Image (cartoon, rainbow over the protein chains, first blue to last red):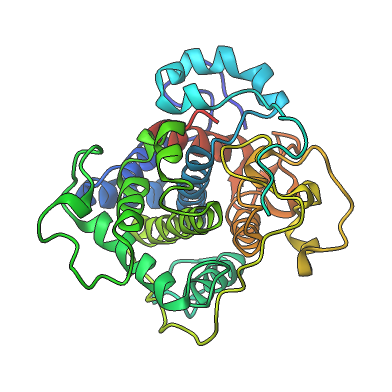
Length: 113
Length: 249
């Protein structure tokens, strides 16, 4: 359920806590991760903890696939992308240089086999 | 509820357990380009990279004396890719890819390697995130790589070649055999990325359907709940994780 904008949750229920969980999963500090894991479990329940960790873990896969294959933005994302990217500071990511709007080269170009 | 994969009272959904079990079986099976023994070595190397003191991204582990043994089952440049993708996902560039493929690795070898590294990172971070022991990879299964390339695979939209049939539906419930699907041109580009090596794409889709949005409902109403999460919570988690990995897509 969306909440009013302007609070530390970013308008998402328990948003601030989920952000800390994701940041801990990106990092390497096991103590920080254990602490925020306990907080999520206490505040949101064990099922939410499992599903939240599952979604973040899945994005660790997706991020590696997209950054490692030069996956271009889909047209819909390209329309939404610029203002959102600016808010996140994502324009400074190395991957932003190589994440073009979807394009297609001439059929058969670089064809395998 | 517990799953055979994890010894825990945490309520890990059956969908998650089944998809991760399929992934782990897949890791130790012969691949399309890498042998089963090489794939097991890839899994082990991801774990070694993740547990090691971090090297700067410009330092290849194979260049550090004593870090990669002379009798390592993988080529040195594959070890370097594994460490880079595992520990420095923010630094993958077209120039980096272009220096590897095709000079050191075929595109097929690269896509399969990238996929495996990404899967292991995912499954291990799931275990780490919940404070559970990581799943052990099984012994290498017998058999040989298929060494097959989908018809019509070409570089079109991504750095890597993709297959035209990647535009077919990606819904996990409909992917049996990866054939007979109606074309869905709106399939997101991320789901085309591994199509050069179809078994890798199939596992990717199974993991997406079980951990994120089931049944291909990526563009569903943002107000819908998914599993125990609100969709807005799910998208926040995806956005923050992607920001941490500096993924522009």
